[in-house]
Image (tube, rainbow, N blue to C red; front, side, top):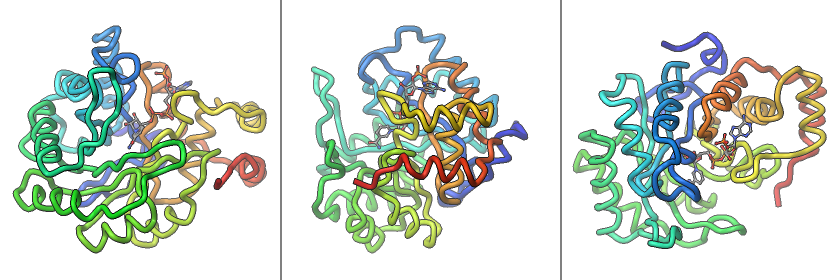
Length: 292
Ligand SMILES: NC(=O)c1ccc[n+]([C@@H]2O[C@H](COP(=O)([O-])OP(=O)(O)OC[C@H]3O[C@@H](n4cnc5c(N)ncnc54)[C@H](OP(=O)(O)O)[C@@H]3O)[C@@H](O)[C@H]2O)c1
């Protein structure tokens, strides 16, 4: 059941699936460093169940979280899936034995990753698969994405993948990608402070393509700013709720997947759906951002 609070943030389409704009990112459910099993499996399962009970119908995941573990938790907690639940996964990396994140963009890597996702999620076809390009502190790696995207488009034609998205990509790569395949979403780093993708977001909004910011709360170290805390205090909200509400107001094509391993944080974050930021709060928050 969709709760009225969640519905107040509206919906957007991912291909032929319509999802609530406020969803959930499952990366935090694996063990420390997104590697190995969670400390408390029952607690991880409870977060997934609480998300769906609260009306979340968009969950972001990957088989390289754990690896395999996050998808297996999703299957254990939620399978058989509700007909309106959209699971979005990503391929393009694999995890070294030391928990490192390594590129896996060759034909065999991508094909294996699609089959790993199918098996561990327990589905016959993946609803949305993001092709994830490697990135570092400077942002996405430059260069053509033609080869791996062509492989993913072939897997789509085989019926294993319904819709394609891109992750960690530049504007040039998005343009290249859109000429190769129908792209339904782009998932890049973006939040109140980190606004390098401003122009891309507006371009995608005009094209009806969803933009899904990762690290919407700042990632490993959640956002901290006096201005953010002051706005939150004035609005009787929390800083994380303000950060999410700001993203919801930033553009209509933004879909949120805040990550958490805690049911309390999950409910707090979903509370952002009904938070409306007045003009003076937006003015204050505007000054925190950097496009560098
Ligand atoms: N495409 C990519 O390359 C890529 C990269 C990174 C992430 N992602 C996706 O994006 C999703 C979101 O990113 P993320 O989880 O890394 O970062 P995030 O959503 O910005 O923040 C998660 C961090 O914030 C904490 N947190 C969550 N809610 C909180 C609250 N209300 N108060 C205080 N702390 C709170 C979490 O800790 P607790 O567990 O303690 O709540 C966790 O440490 C991931 O789940 C994943 O699906 C994609």
